[in-house]
Length: 263
Image (cartoon, rainbow, N blue to C red; front, side, top):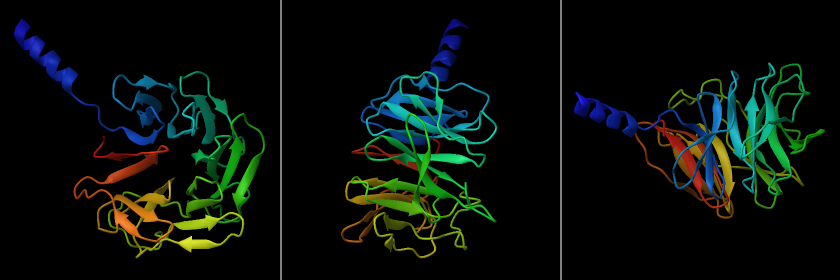
C-alpha cells in the first residue's frame, strides 16, 4: 500500500501544467496567464510566482523592455482597464480610467509608456485605436488616428506594426472571411502604410524583433509563427505545427515565446 501511494504521488508530481496562456518574455523571465491570473517563471525553468490573485479576469501581460514591470488588462473594477505591477509582485497601479475598455498591448521602446487599445472617443459604432499612457499614470496619448486592435513598436519607435481588426472568433480555423485584414507597418511621422502580403489569411499577434516582424498566421491552413523582413519584404515560416496550433505570441529583445497545445 505504501509503495502504491508513493508511485501515485510521484505520478501526480510529474504531471505538467496545461492551459498556460499569453506568454511574454523579459531577458530572464516569462510571464503568462493561468486561471485568470498573472504568473512569472524564470526562463530557465523552476517554480512560478503568482503575481495577481483576485476574482477578476487578468490577461494580456506585457513585460517592460527592462523586465522590471508588467502591464496587463483586468476587469477588477468592472470594465477592462490597463494596470501595471512590479515583476516582483505587489499592489498594481491602474493606468486607464475611461469608461470604454482598454487592453494592454505592449510598451514604447524606452519603457516609459504602456501601449494599449481602446474604443474611447469613437462613434457611432466603437472601434479600437492605439493609445499610450505613462507607466506612472496620467493622460493618454493617441498613437495614430486609424483602426488599431493590436500593435508593436519598431525598435527605434518610429513605426508600428498594426493589426487593425478585433476578430469575434479567433478559434475559427482556416477562416477566410471579411475580418481578415492585412497587418500594416505604419510610419508614425508620415502615416505611410506598408501592407504585409496577405491572401485573406488570419494574421494576428504581431511583435517586432530587430529588423523583422513576427506574427501568427494560418496561411498554411494551421496557425503558425511567421516572419516578415521589413527591409526585403520576405516572408518565412518559423514553426510548422499541423495539429494543435500556435495561439499567442510574445517577444523579448532577443527571443520569441509562444503558446502551443496548452504549453
